[in-house]
Every structure is written in structure tokens, then in C-alpha cells.
Image (cartoon, rainbow, N blue to C red):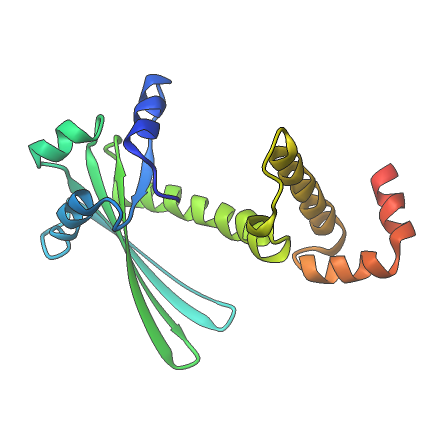
Length: 189
């Protein structure tokens, strides 16, 4: 989840929708206020452990009620702070990180955990591929409908790769570079 400005949150609320937004250090007052809750008793906690791809990951999602009146006045409808602690053990090395979120919802920790994990799945399965494999961030198309068109074509290519070759976008690119006729046959169907 990218940093979401106050104006964006206000627009979300004006559209009668809800938000769960990540808070980073570029919002220092809010960030520090959430950090102050790390050592306090959470309203609710949820623990998830999984072992995949040779790594063991433990995630603890905690929720806290927002009580700071200044924060409440500055952030529309804010109700909940969410802190996700992630510990990762891979190849004998342990890493730890915390991620901070805010929301206008009052849900339990498991519900927030699922919302955040779903977003991370989108980030990992789509945006990472667009950024790293398709180098979308280096694209210099800046005018008219060019940026949107490039993004749509990138999404179409990702869908074709996944349909044909499962999860390996790189292997699909190698296959289609070597056999352009097969790519055209797939597009025609």
C-alpha cells in the first residue's frame, strides 16, 4: 500500500467507501503516534505462521483504537491503528519489520490481517512483475493516454504469460521470444 495523502482518504470517504492505508515516515506525526502504541496492550491480536519457499514467516497483526484527538481531527473518520509485525527466517538469517496502517473501520485483527495480506498479494503478483520484469517505472511515456495504454498492455501480457506458463513470467517471455507464432496463435483464440 502506497502512502495515501489526506485528500485521497477524504475522496474515498466522500464516495461512501472505507480505507485501510499504510502509514510511512513521510507522515511523521501520525507515524510517531502509531509507533507509541507498539509497547501498549492491543485491542486485538492475530497470529499467522507459514513456511513456504524455504522460509518461515510469522506475522502478528494488532489493532488499537485511535484516541488522540488531534489525529482524529486531521484524518477523516479514523478509528483504528493497525500494526503488523513480521519476522522472517530464511537460510539461517532472521529479519524483522513493522508496518503501520490506519483505517476508518473497527474490525478485529484477523479481518485487518486478511485485508492487508490480500493487498500484499496484489502487490507481489502484479505490481512487482510490472516494476521488475516489465520495468514499468523506467517507462518514459508521459503524455496523453500513453501511460495508461502501456499499463494495460503490460497487464494483458502478464495474463497471457500466466495462462500459458503458470507463475513464471520470465520463462514465458523466453518461450515467446523463441516462438512468436505460438504467441500469435494464443492471442487469436
